[in-house]
Image (cartoon, rainbow, N blue to C red; front, side):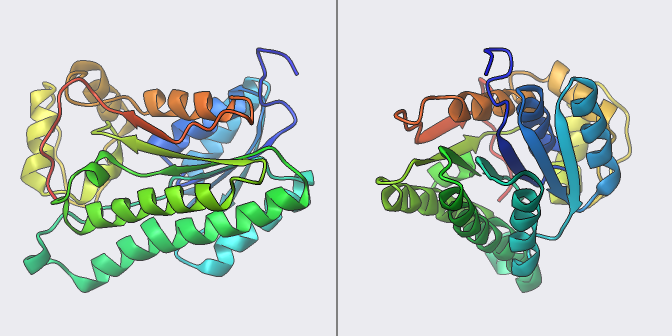
Length: 275
């Protein structure tokens, strides 16, 4: 194993890898030598990432899946193990937010957040540990939480991220006697399509602050070039997905004796985002 490829020979899974933070994490892990299995619901963008990883000399596979389906999460992990014989890194990144006030919220949107942000992560953790134990891996589980978990009034979305942080801590205790480590990563405001379900006026204001004239429709993804411009022009308020990916790479390349429990990655200035 060379320093240039610290993850050579290891298998990694990244959920929510279609865009944003998940896509960046998958590419950084692939560039570090891991065989990455990208999972998400948008195949085309993951195929682009797969090509990028392979052009850099890495290995990648794309598995389209809906993590709200327990069977699909388990099948994702089985597919990676069947293909490579092992699992070393599990990144539970898939997540979504519907930032309506509780009194105005849609229970079906709450259900989507609970199933994606909590249930899928729990199932991913459970199945990953089983796979890592089976191949005696020095495993790394990375759960993507949020700085919203640091606030007591961060709404329903924040509540799901409080749960993620609690799950990470509880699982870490359960794995103290295993060669499996758990890292909880809490990003702040990052330039991704995560905010596509936010209030339209809020998103439009952010785009205008970056000097762009782009029509924004609630629920629709912003073009990659718009996100890149936001990240480059608003560095004080918006972080870059690659910064989160670098933090994940740092955590999973530490010796197994080192337990990186929590990492906060945020821009210099805090932002009162909707909740």
